[in-house]
Image (cartoon, rainbow, N blue to C red; front, side, top):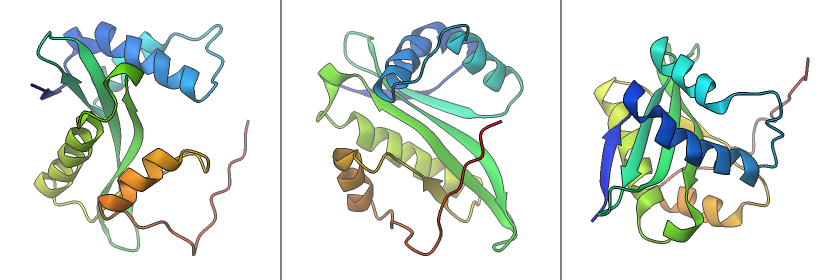
Length: 148
């Protein structure tokens, strides 16, 4: 049985383990960085909402982090689903679906216009899941990033 919960500060250490796996998946160098502190600060400052899933053994098996944004075109709140990760041993068990459903619920509860996300162009499994959940790939806009 899977249970989804909204993260509190007391959950950060366990979620941080998943977050580090997520960063590794995307080949992010975390040398001289503190992933746990990053997550803790987001929650302390109410800058994000984190949901996590535990299994019947109370193991943390997945998480999603959403950031509140605003859309000038919609003149309304939106949510950026920036992080979503499921432990490799627990994939294909409905964990990601629970997290996506919870993101939808958060958006509805906050009267947001939409949830947006991005994923690697080679992450075909995630793309298939997102499209199954009515996320539409935007072919009208390009994303540009300027590193500082």
